[in-house]
Amino acid sequence: MVYKFGIIGLPNVGKSALFNKITKLNIPSKNFPFCTIDPNIGVVSVFDGRLKKIAYCVSSKNIVYSIVTLIDIAGLVKGASKGEGLGNKFLEKIRECNALIHVVRCFKNTNIIHIYNDINPIRDIDIINTELLLSDLDLCERIIKKGSLRQSANDRNQKVSLNLINRCIRQLQSGFALRDIIFSKDEWKKLKQYQFLTLKPVIYILNMESNIDIDFSLDNVFKNNNFNKSTVFSIILNENNNTKINNMNYELSKKNIFYIDFINCNTIIKKVCDALKLKMFFTAGPKEVRSWIFKKGETALQISKLIHTDFSKGFIRAQIISYDDLIKYCNISKIRKLGKIRSEGKKYIVQDGDIINFLFNI
Ligand SMILES: Nc1nc2c(ncn2[C@@H]2O[C@H](COP(=O)(O)OP(=O)(O)OP(=O)(O)O)[C@@H](O)[C@H]2O)c(=O)[nH]1
Ligand SMILES: [Mg+2]
Image (tube, rainbow, N blue to C red; front, side, top):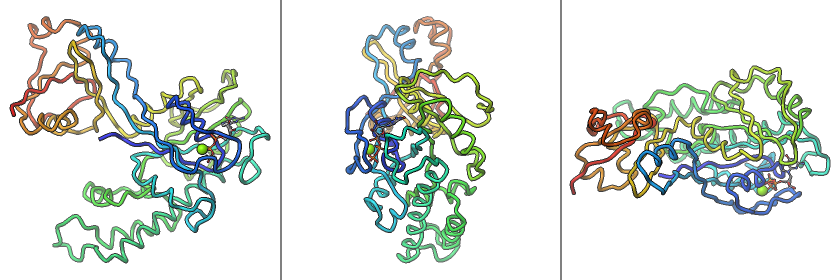
C-alpha cells in the first residue's frame, strides 16, 4: 500500500507552494483564494541516507526509494460543511488520506490576500479543525441512521456499537478530536473502517518568513492548550528568507517542533512518516537496493506481501541482516561466515533497518 498524506488549510495560505516544493512539480500557486479546485496529486520519494551506504556495501548502482502520495486539497473555509466556499466535497478527498499536513499562515506580508483579512493562526487552525469535527459528527449521525450498528455484546462482527459512536459524538461536540480519545485496540480496528478525519494524525506546518513571524506564531500557538501530545508541529521558512533563527526561547525538543527551511522541506515527509510510526526495511542485491515502508509491529509474512503476493503465498523464511552489521562488515560473505545472517519465520516482528531476503516456493 502507498501511504497518502493530504495537505489541508484555509485558502491562499501556501498549500500548493509547499506541494510544489516537496514534489518538485509546478502546479499553480497564485495570490488568490481557491486557486486550487481539483486536488493535485504527486508522488514523493522518502529519502533515507541508509540506502546509499547499503548500495556501497552490496556494490549496487541502483537505488529505489519508497514512495508516498501527496495530495494538495482545495482550501476550506468556515461553514464548508454547510456548503460555504467550495463546500465540503473536498473533505471526502481527505478521508482517504493516512495523515494530514495542516498548513497555517503565519507570514504577515500584506500583499498576499488573507481570506479573513488579518493574520491569526489560532483562529485559522480552529476554523479548519471545526470543519473536520463537524464532518465527523455528520459521519457519526450517518452511521447511526444507517442502522448497521452492533445490537448486542454477542454480535461478534466488525460492526461498531452505539456506545462507541455516542462516545465519539460527545467528544466531537465538546470540540475535541477523536485522536485524543484512548480507544482499545478492538475499538480502533472497528472505527478505522469509517476513516474519521479527526482520528488521523496531523502535522502542522506554520508557514512563516521571518523571526518576527516565528515569535508571534509560536507564542500564540503554544499558549493555546487545545493541542495535545499527539500533535506534531513543523515550521517552514519562506523561500526568500535567509534569516537564521538564533534567539529561540522555546524548549523545542519537548514540543516536537522542527525547523525546516524551504530548501529542505522534503524532510517533512520523513517527519510525517515518523509521526505515523512508519518504519523502513530494505531489499538489497547487485541489481538494486530498495527501501520499503512498513508499520511498526508488522510481521515478516505481512511485509512480504508488499514486495509480491507470491512471497507471502509461498513464504519459507526470511534471511535477515541488520543494518548495523551490514555497515560494520560491509561484506556479505564475511557476514555469512560470522553467522550474522539470521533466519526468521512468518511471525518475526520486522525491525526498522532490517535488510531482508525472502525465500519462497510457489
Ligand atoms: N510572502 C509569502 N508568500 C507566500 C508564502 N507562502 C506562499 N505564499 C504566496 O501566497 C500565495 C498563495 O499560495 P498558494 O500556494 O497558492 O496557496 P494555497 O493554500 O494553495 O491556496 P488555495 O489553492 O487557493 O487554497 C501565492 O502567491 C504564494 O506565492 C510565504 O511564506 N510568504
Ligand atoms: Mg492551492
